[in-house]
Length: 339
Image (cartoon, rainbow, N blue to C red; front, side, top):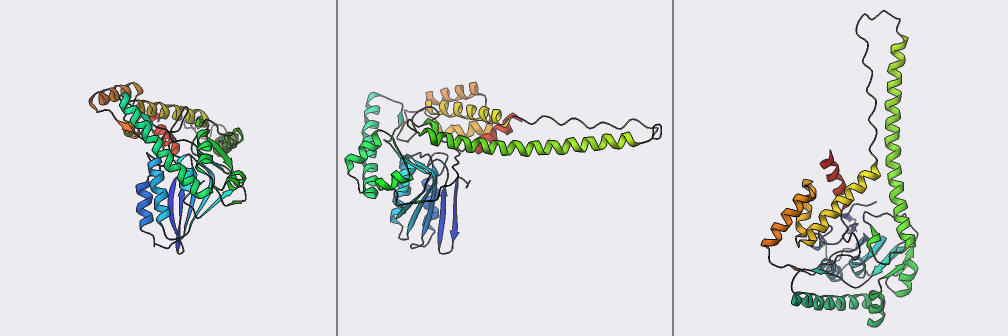
């Protein structure tokens, strides 16, 4: 699987890979725009997408930058282009989807803490954002605004064939192995087959890790047996010294699935606490420090008491576990915290 975000020169053009959430602590529009701006104006760009979406404002900024680019932009959806990521895909002069890839569009959503006036203002902002997204999807697909609104309202998932039929993609390619660094079950209508495929991929990766650990244990066991055999072959009474120390039994390998689930549960709890307190920017620091959840709660309450009401038009995903985080980094930090 490709890294979460990378841009690589390829001859006269460049390949850009977005394999993470868009915005927040994922792939920011600022980073992408800075690197796109360094490319020659007519350089062709190959954009590879595997993202659950994220900040609608970052997505719109990336979309506009790609549309301004004078060179040809080819978008390939390697696995999933959901929510805001599907809007980025619409900037492609050509959109290619492997046969087993998916595209999803839905209404923008947000979260706000404040007065009734704040709530109404946010609702109005979301309506305007939705209108902008409708125009982008309609421009690519050739569908009417009414058709796009209906698809967005019910959170529509399209496989490659359906995306081509609706005009969101231009052609299909050969299927690829699905993989994701994010949990797609938080979406309301995620196709069961897609959820199962991603989970099967994760299970296969865990099994590969487990086989590697088992092989290491077998080497340790063979080494221990070799020492024991050598000691038994020595004639009795020849050494006159202390008995050779027996090698320590290898410690059992940690259950990777259990550790991973604990790390994800801790990270989700931190993210939820920070979002509820209106301080989402503090989550990364807490995750890096491995702070206790009670201490995190107290710190956020104190910070919230001093802060002004915060109105955020971000684009969190609906359902439990709304955010798509760089879990590999979170898990690595959690290992360090637990070690």
